[in-house]
Image (cartoon, one colour):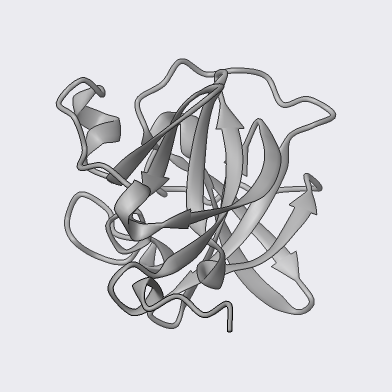
Length: 158
């Protein structure tokens, strides 16, 4: 029949992948609403340093996070390939500024390894797992942890 009994114990998960400083990261596709070209971002006085500001998305105000700063990576100028990934988790919507969006990949849960202790401290707390692919490692993001700030409050409460 073509059905695998394995899918219940080993679900196939879809990931939207993006690039930051030549490293590839993934977010579960069910959290991704859309991908936008970078347009005007309005700064928010008093916001945490990793918050770039807010954008108007069809009448809704969405907080945009500088993913490089959030992960403790060196800053880089925005380019033609820079994108804002609009994500939603637990009724909260934010935008993630990334260097570029790569592709959608499908991984079985069994292909995802536990987080090694090699990532920088800042970045490691947002990574739920890693997939070793031909081109290198794919770091898989834990959206719920990323959506919280250091005080364990939601980012959009800035």
